[in-house]
Image (spheres, rainbow, N blue to C red):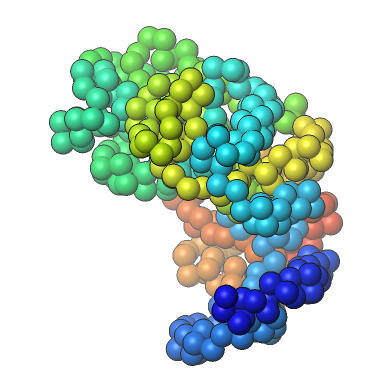
Length: 468
């Protein structure tokens, strides 16, 4: 054994304690830690030089604490409202530490019970979202891969309607496939590219006036125009810009009259099911052919973690089966190696299991309600400051989408958000909504409280005042 490895093995208890202390110091100081930091620029040469000098685990921890940790964002904290970013509940953090320590590869089900824990966790979460036993699920790395899997199954279904198995015959024999959507997330275009369908396969349909929600009447008109064409429809449950919802119930009913695969991107919107005030927006989710739900967003488990559900396990096996003698037979309860693009995979279910076991549905529902209340409060505060700020969309869930007076172009919005970032108080991200450059704040962190919405509002006003 290499001397440094032997040394670290002997010193593992002390190394673990030092790592724990560093992590706790960071977590306990999150309220004072800057929400985000400006990158220092390229330092590749210095980094590479340092990496040529092995120093053992204690030395590596010291270098990380000195050279890197001070320059990281406070993305685990309550005022990091960029993108749609959750944190890590204490229980999920415990699960994640154990995931790395135990280092299970829950690919197959004949060397441990790790896959059983995943199945139980998936089933429990499915019930939270109102998904029936017909929807079978699996953990994947994130919403992008979940959407990829759902569209891969949709592609296989389209092939089946045309009398071929794409998984066997190949893409060349399939021909063009159209993906219809109102306001799809960028990962839908990315998935279309990776699946060989091409980004041009994504066809944008009209949305309702002043909204991100698909105009179902326009979709029906498009379907009537191609009655013999097997299509994929991507619905949104929580759009990234405004948290808007397509009418899932209407879409499920429409599928009874027309032939299409219904995929629902509910990456964070599925969690509306946990708040009775907004739960009606995800009615109909169970009727989808495939569903994407992200866990490292509103479930507040560490990256990376998401769920993929489908009613068509037969198509999933057809696309992703990985037959090999050493893997054993597929059987009636397929191992996860046959269900996703991954063979080897992290035991992502354990952090989720810890959080579900620790706090239950009601504990997570409280997080969702509190985040929605925070978004509504920020929206109210911004409206009260008109015309300095203008809400561009009602706060339908957890996202506040607003314009800033005198910052109505890309450069102006970016400059404002960089100044806000550099203040250390909050981090928000830009967007373009209904043809206007805007700012969006996404509340999805378990630590966020009403005071954080107030601090973000005050920080926005402060950076605007300083610019005058």
